[in-house]
Length: 73
Image (cartoon, rainbow, N blue to C red; front, side, top):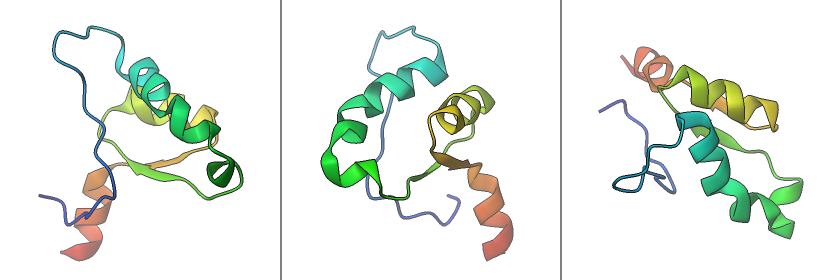
């Protein structure tokens, strides 16, 4: 809907009630531990403020998807 073509979409598992930011951080753990991910630039798009805040603390640039839609429009 926002003009973003992601390489991967990470969604909440059915029934999972973990807080948004902590869930995404946990879901990314194996990806972030890969050698090729260590020094790579990491950019994500998420509309949840808690996710953006949590992931920025671990070095990931997180952009609200509406910011991309504004640039495309």
